[in-house]
Image (cartoon, rainbow, N blue to C red; front, side):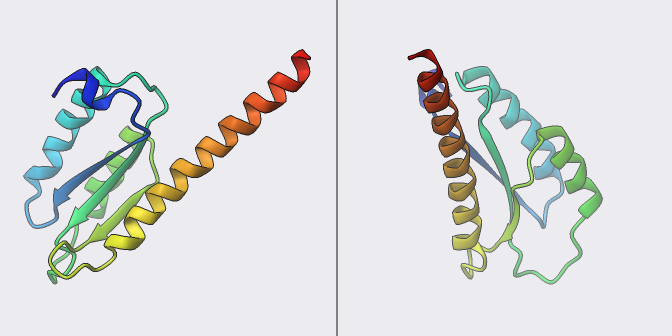
Amino acid sequence: MTRSYHRGKDAVILVYDVEANYTLDHLQYWVDEVLACTDKPDITWAIFGNKCELEQKFDAKVLETYRLDLDTNLFSFVSAKTGDNVREAFESVFAHVHRKAMAMNSGSAARDGEST
């Protein structure tokens, strides 16, 4: 990855395979890669567990560990195969990024008003 690829990005979505727990281990690698390349310390992180159409138990404890390490509440189980929850997952990321942008804009507008 090149630094310019991540420069100015507001969100990163990491996807892992719920059928293969080892893919969770790779999440930290990608987090480190993005952090090394991004110029935004307050980037929004989201994790999507793919293949939710499979009827198996998901290891919620492992997922909780990643939630704490990444400091995010944007977790979704999705299915690329059936489309289950894909739209909702992306919309939650977009809504979160929008709320952060609006908060930053209202904060900078308040500071601009104070300086005049």
